[in-house]
Every structure is written in C-alpha cells, then in structure tokens.
Length: 252
Image (cartoon, rainbow, N blue to C red; front, side):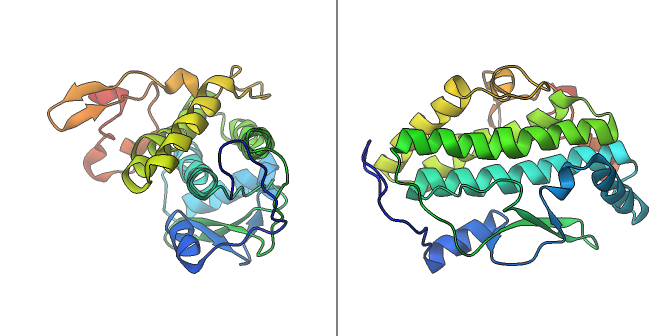
C-alpha cells in the first residue's frame, strides 16, 4: 500500500470481499458480462438507439430526458467507485472504455459497470498513478462519452458535465469524510484538489477542467448547506408532480 509518495510495488490489484461489496454498492462489479462495452457507447448511433429503447419502454418521456438521466447514472457508477477505491484503499482501477462494460436492466432502467477480474497495479509513484487514473477515467472515458451524448441528443454539454460533477463532489465532500480515517480524509483532500485544480481535460466540450465551473459556494438553508446547480438535469420531467431536485436552479 502507498504511504505518502512511496511506490506501489504489487503487480496485481486484489480486493477483499468487504471492498468488493462496497464497490457493488457504488454500482461497480467484477468479472460480469455487460450488455455494452463503454467503447460501444461512444458510437452515437448505438447510444441513441439505447436511449430510444428506454423511451419506448416508458422509462423517460423523450431522448433528451433519457440522455440526461443516463449521464447521471453513468457518471455515478464510473466516478464514485473508481475514485473511492483509489483514495480510500490506494487501489487504482485503471480501466478505459475497452475494459468497462455496462450492464442494463431496462425493466427498471438500472445500470451497473463491470470491470475484469484481473487488473494490474502500476509501480509508479502515487501522484503519477493519480494522473494516469484521471486521464483514463475522464479524458478516455467520460469526455468522449459526453461528446457522444451531445451528438446523440443535442443536450448541452454543461448539463452533462454537471451531472457527473455532482458525484465527484459527493465522494470527496460527503462519502469519504463520513467513512474514512484521518489518513484517508487527508488523501481525499489532496485528490479532490488535484481533480479540481490541476487536472486538464482534453475535450472540446469543456474548459481546461470539467468540474470546477460547477464547484460553487454552498448556501446555508434550514436543512443544511446546499450547493445549487448551474443547470437543470430535467429530473422534474420524470418526478412525481414535476418536483425539482432540491439543488436545482429552479428551486432557488
């Protein structure tokens, strides 16, 4: 295990049963067979066909709404488990689109990501591994997915990136601080800073950093501090009674 700047020397990633159970809670499983590879979802025609199927099955009223909600789920099940594993346990899941598979239960519009049983560990320094992980996760996976979703649905890239950003914020501001020890919380602050302030995205759909534009100050409310979104995720079009998310800009 890495301590500070020391190298990771193990060649194989090994997850305990408890760790696998935690990742499954975050919608990531090992060794299963998904309906689509992440690479296939980078084809706009295939992605649009999948969204149209979800609409025809009655899960969403339109392809645009389906696309926004699909992005929220895809953003969660890639960012949350992969960043959690790296920050909490120093176990980097270096998986690009070819290694990720998406399992769908269209009856309930439930999704999960599957990765191979066998993953290699890098022998690089932790900071270099973090940069490699961020590049694979964001530049090779999320950014091309956003580009494809924009092409398939004509959705605003800002909506899609914020749909992912909210889960990055949740992992580092809520989940890890509530579950981690002092060392893990300290690592979380370092990794969060890197992803917000140092990481550079190569996609034309965002600026240098895809998350920073949405990292605004929280506003104190009676039920606690809230960071309002800059964009609406269109959840009100599928919720009972047209209710908005509590962080929706419409709710301010």
